[in-house]
Image (cartoon, rainbow, N blue to C red; front, side, top):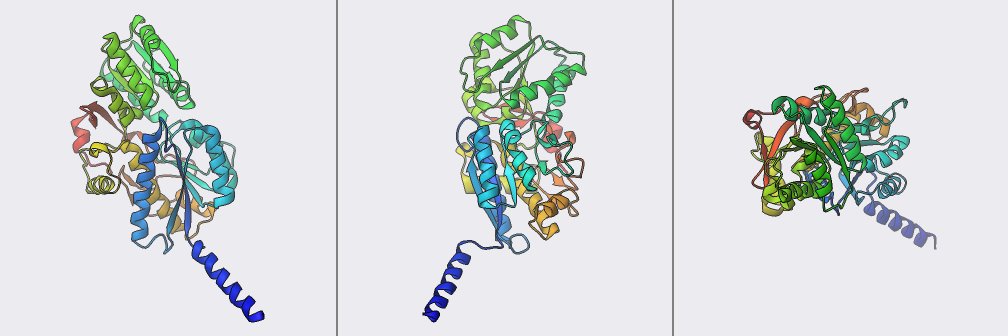
Length: 394
C-alpha cells in the first residue's frame, strides 16, 4: 500500500508540473476583442502574440517561456474590473498589457496598482491613465502610446497654426475617452486664443450625427475636430457628405482605425490625425520585418492592419517588458517596476528605440517628437508630411 501511495504521489506531482510550469511568465493581455473597439483590441493582441512568439523562439526571458492569458473586456468598464481581479487572484499574472479604452483602464488598473503588479497600457490615451495615483509611493501604471496631452496640441497646431482655421467645432463621444480628450483639446486651443464655436456630444452606437453637424455648420465652423472611435467617426464623415458640407476633419489617432476608414469610404479621405506608427512605407528594417511577419501570421483584410498603431504599440510593449524582466532577473512586481523605471539597455522597437523610456516620475514612453501626422487617402493612412515618411525614427 505504501509503495502504491508513493507511486500515486509521484505521478500526481508529475501531472501537475506538466500542466503548469512554475517558471512560465504569465502575462495578462486585455482588450476589446469584439464590438466597436475590436479593431484596436485585436490588432494589439496580435502584435503582442507576434512579439511573444519571437521571444519564446529565441529562448524566452532568462530561459523562461512567456504565456499569454488573454481576455476580451468588450470595452466595458465593469468587465475590465472583473478581468483584473481574475488575472490577479486566479491566474496569478506577473504583469498586465493592453487596455484600448480609457474608461476601462481607469476602472481597472487600480487593482493592479494595489497588487503591486505593473501594467503597460499600450493603446488607451487618456492623459489621466498614468496619473491616477499621485500620492502613492510607487506608480505601477506605464504607457506606450501617445497620451492625449501630446495629441491634442498637435491637432490644434494642425488646424489653427498650419491651416489658419480658427472657427473650430469639437465633436466628441460621451465616454471618458471622448470627454477627457475634449478637455485636452480645449486647453490646446486656448494657447492660440481659440474658443470652439460649437461643442457637440454623441453616444457610442449613434448612427445619425445630423443635429450635431448642423449646429457646427450653422455656427460657422471651418474645421471639425474629433475625439471618438472608428464607427462613430465614420458617421461624422458620412453625415458631412450627406449635408454637402465639405470641411477638414482633424482628430485623435483613432481616425486611423479600419472601422472608420472602411465605413466612411471616400468620405474619410483627407482626415488627419497624430500617429506613432504608419504601416506603409515601412521606413526602417525593423518596421518592414514587423509588417511582413504580422501580415504572414494574421492575414488581415486587403493586407492592411486594422489598427497599425495598436499592433505596433502592443508588439513593442512585450519587448520593453521582456527587457525589464531580464534586467530584474525576477518576476516580482516591485523588481519589475524598478527595472522599467531604469532600463539599462536600449530596446529597438517598431515605434522607436526605447532608450530609458521611463523614470520614477515619468511613465510615458512616447513624447511629442515620436509622433507624426497621418492622413487617410484611398483606404489607408499615409504620412501627411514627406519628410516624416523618409525619416528614420530613433
